[in-house]
Amino acid sequence: MGAAGGGALRLPGLHGYAVEFSPYWPGRVACAAAQYYGIAGCGTLVVLEQNEAGIVLLRSFDWNDGLFDVTWSENNEHVLITSSGDGSLQIWDTAKTTGPLQVYKEHTQEAYSVDWSQTRGEQLVVSGSWDQTAKLWDPAVGKSLCTFKGHEGVIYSTIWSPHIPGCFASASGDQTLRVWDVKAPGVKLVIPAHHAEILSCDWCKYDENLLVTGAVDCSLKGWDLRNVRQPVFVLLGHTYAVRRVKFSPFHATLLASCSYDFTVRFWDFSKPNPLLETVEHHTEFTCGLDLSLHNCGQVVDCAWDELVKIYTPSCLAVAV
Picture (tube, rainbow, N blue to C red):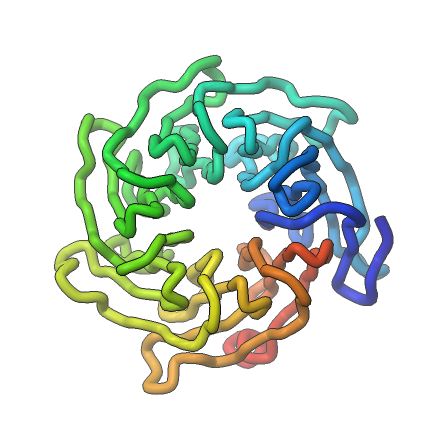
């Protein structure tokens, strides 16, 4: 695995599905990837770091099925969890050369998303699956604590609220965004957000009532949980499905999206012309995207062209 110019690393034979910056180490990134576009073959968790020489490979761990998502632990800087095409979750320790430490196998179809809670006082993980369920996990317990049913299509995305303990959102092929409370058995809120499959959702870091969805209809929509009859914003520009959406950790109205149109786009929904910049540096479906908590404006993305890229788009360099 060699560098492909400054700020890029090629992962030969691996197609990137998800990337996430470490909450502990500036410049450290985890990437979940799969062989053969995730249709067949194995998966690999890759841990990378950007330094003066570019992006270097720190660790890689193989799994016997494609890896579709990754999340860093919020209480141990070396621990990660991935989700896999065989329905299982894997816990990895990057301080060790082999792994995984544990495997949780309960989902009956692809485990497509996994997220570690960010609110203080709890260490919980939520996973979402093509079996139409979300599951709640305590990483210290060997089995799920709860299963959330209600979606009528595959779940593509499950994301914890950064504000409200025990609250998470899920996005599904059934065209709904749903909000759940781990202390209550049923769904808290159902939003028919698009007339298309919803592939991604994220919470605003500055407003506990604001979420964004990205869908196969090429649009991003903002939702205020206090009034969900109409979106508070609609962002148009992508020409194929929106694969992942992320709010900025530094700016309340800034967000980023990546798409099957090979681009990453940056938006400010408070502006009359919200599209700030379009980055076109991939040649395949762009699936993974994250914004750094440490370095304002720094972005990582990954695509099916085998490349992981870390960069600062000009619009975010100005925003700093």
